[in-house]
Image (cartoon, rainbow, N blue to C red; front, side, top):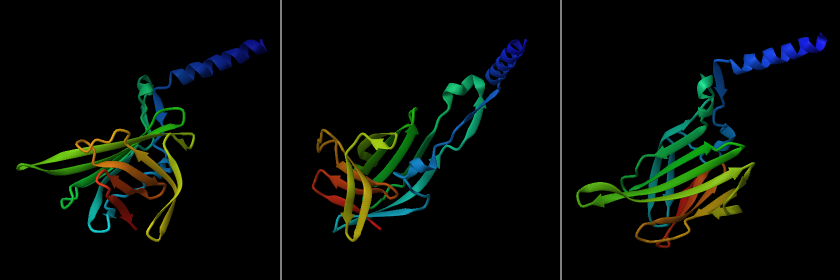
Length: 198
């Protein structure tokens, strides 16, 4: 009788769980924002030694915990994104996004865009994208322990490079991303190196 009562209690608990009307979806973990640690209104200044341009971060967003109906439990999403305004002097703009891909796996996409005039229209000329997957704290791209820019040394730096470089379609072919600082260096196909001033 005790076994039957115990089984009945367990079965009731299982049924109660499956009949819940709502599911709690976890938000994007703030600790995973270290590659894109930007704030709204923050100004990033990049220089190649001769020229400078400024990028003002316009939007920073990441999902916080939320509740959805049980029938949509498979649709829980955990993501973050941030982007800058276009610097009108240089035409540069950056977009960054991150998304949980399940099993403690996160995908990061960094996009360096360059706008310019084509005749009388202002259009995007290049959109150079860099992607990395992080799983259990390890990345699938080259990991440099340090990178020195001027008097500042960055630790935990990840470098990403476009495999096929075609000057007609690629402008920035490699970026360096430092944990806690974001994009600290961008290398152009023309040999230019755009360095973050901090």
